[in-house]
Length: 429
Ligand SMILES: *Cc1c(COP(=O)(O)O)cnc(C)c1O
Image (cartoon, rainbow, N blue to C red; front, side):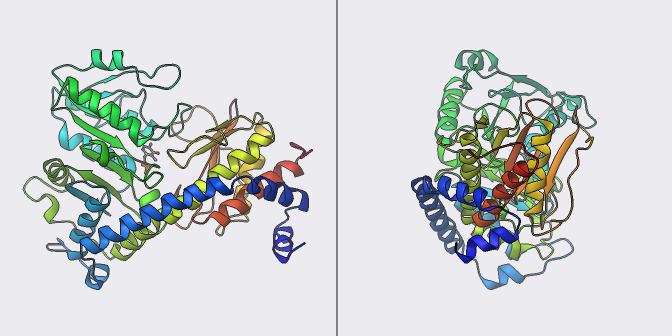
């Protein structure tokens, strides 16, 4: 045994689990090579965008407070984001508090009373239900007289073009397309698929604005939604593009007039993007963006490793071990409450922060069952960091994502298996 194996043993991982992990890894070399090639491409893309925007030292350390007029750090970063996402403009701010806020901001910047919003990909992410007013909520778009319609996906998870065509009419102003499945069981969409859907929608109604919820999808492929016709691309800096370093933030990239509208909505009509001090977070925004392609690659390797480990042990996994990836989320149906709890405790035990905490199932607002969550993150709730959670109800699926480095993700997954073994829930032969 090598010294490395000894290290894993000190973490409490038995040799049998370590060797099983190594045997699974042996089959994943080609797959990991492909993930590295995508990361390399995206790293070039980010460096090129930063060079083109002439990022300089002043951008990193310019400490803007107060109104934040002429903040070069903020304005250059927005240029770099627009260059990365191949859009005309971008809004990237610490004043955008999270992904939901960014999406809500984009919707309310563009939509007016009497307009209709359409989701052609079924139900949107949970938190958007209250933004839109699908679940009645204070301040929702519904309260402002903005209506909503939805076209369901077909049973195989593909677009129902017939239903989408029927749902588009003269009031339809904006179409929102969620790239990642989030915590649903539908497939996540490739950027290419999203491009086909946008082309279809624009053929029916050319002036419809197409927005893509890009959360969890950034840098997973070599193309982004802006490359295939999206007018607005929206995401969270506490996920992929923050690279684990951004302490807060969201971004919206897209057409200039729409981004200006988002600026007016974020601050005030008349002020728009001109104000909003960057408050010293710029270095982490730039450095996070710079690291993001590598961080996403680490998270993807973790997801692929977990899928293959648990698939081999007979558990249903979504996506499957060999399936192509369009986001960083991996679901594993563990089948029992004990399995879900042991898995999450293993992930927690591998964390650099709060490793001694023991996760317990708990009631959470917005959920109809108890939920268990494992996270030992540097940034609160950051799901680009290694984390796992799941509702305590059948099929006891755990949603696993993140890992700032592949080797941390690997340790977490081996720990999850070790904890399942200790509780007698799984055997390796
Ligand atoms: C995470 C996520 C959101 C919301 O982002 P928060 O930062 O949690 O508010 C929206 N849509 C999708 C698909 C997500 O994964």
